[in-house]
Length: 572
Image (cartoon, rainbow, N blue to C red; front, side, top):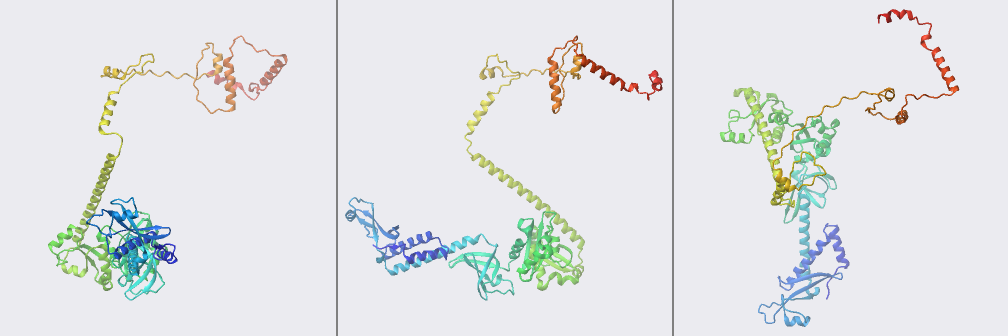
């Protein structure tokens, strides 16, 4: 019977296209093909529950219809599922009930229509595989920066070829006024990854605030390393971006790091967003200072909480709700001439400040405040005092979170330690503790070696109570003997030998020679009547040397007047 030849040129080419063009694993294609053949054959014989086995034998894909052997008189016999015992014995004399008999299926019997059904099923399964693969690959990459090549430009969207799939850049996610052309390399962020019946869709964006943030992370090493942090960012694509930066390192200027040498870093980002204005300022935990920075270039005179007098639409319930979450609306006071600057063109400056601070902001002029008759100084002081309270509450909350985290880690560690297999149970440990306590013997004096050894058990019974002997008073230290040279030992008539402790010095050759000579002298027995014996020539040489020394002595010096010192010595 004929099967599918796996060495067929068309089959091999089809597998290659699946692997290279669609990036589908050949093993997955083969398993899918087997499943499609099973479903096709079941449909062909109109038996969805039929047992079918697909196997690869000698480079051919073969199909076998499996039948269960049943008793000849079985009432539930089904020819698509079962085979009678008598018929089974004709094929296999050793067959018995519940055995399985396989019949090979000829592909020619299946027919072209059924093959087309298998083909469509295979395509559907591969589409589902590709859809799931794309979803799994990009789901965890949301808001990451990615580069792609523009494939199609339409009025409402742009299709961009990214790795292994096609992303879509909708009109709402584009920078207003930006022109695109096919073949252009473009940077975007992955805004959203979704999966539906048509496939997985990767939505890209160039108008989101995260796009500017990712560009700064790429251009500014301090941000990528974590030294400088972007605490908040708000953007009106094509018009202006406001970004608050912060650093814990006092030696780093966060604003200067983002701007770069001669503005090179910020200019690179501005070039990517087609000349969009970017305001970079320092983050401040004080919401009042943060609002002042966010409303730049307008100068803020005062900032305080809104009340019923400044904002009549505020109700008691609103005030209670805002106070609960520490997000009370703010009133900002500016000069009458600076109102338009604070609001900005079409209100964009104020809107960006609201987005960045996540607070409702009511901008009023100095004239409006004067008409309301408000005590601005008092309101500002109350506002600052409340900011101090909020800061303390945040610190306390952070401290409590750290404590809870430490307690949680300790509990987890104790639990892991308890689960660890130490090889001892509690009973064993208690028995070991008791044994150690019984075998503790306090011995003050070292026992004599001649004494017979005493068993520990007997000693424990005898020495239930151990009395410590009083310590003997320490003996006074002996006085340090005075230094006495070897030659003094020779001259001393007492002939007492004393050892003298001399500080060790670094040895050299002369010291070593002297030490050897002194040791030789110590070995020799000293005799008082010992006199050296000289030859006549040695005696003459010694007498001549003594005469020369006497002649050259300072006593024979005629320049010295001894009478001059006579009175001095008489007084002494």
